[in-house]
Image (cartoon, rainbow, N blue to C red):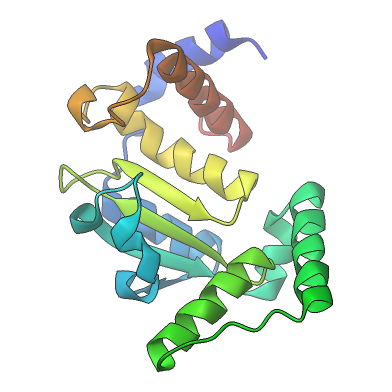
Length: 189
């Protein structure tokens, strides 16, 4: 991949590659036949060390089986199959103290076994998605989100102080390369 050419294309189109948070959410909901859920449904988010809980503005779930079949790659599907087999072999039963915890345990199990993918979006500036998580690994969805949120970072709309504070210069360069690859993958350049 020629990153110099991708960078030049980005420089020419960057004003069209910055999306506000509502547009990112709209595109995710439409593309993946997804729906929003309350952040309180994902009970462990309050302890997440990657996102700021008060700044989480939207949680999205993808649980349409036809969509999931299309978005997970072969390795991801194999990992989910291993999880299902392992849970069945061990006869895993999760205890819960109330209905909310039962639903949460089922959410975790469905993520582990590939029956759902949850996306968590944060906005520290109130305008753009500043960080995101995909719970359950899905390269395609992660790249799609990056292609819509990276523009605000790499054009300077999101100040460097709002990025992950422990990123090294090398990690920032690598992230920019991933962003360019995502733009290329989804024909945004």
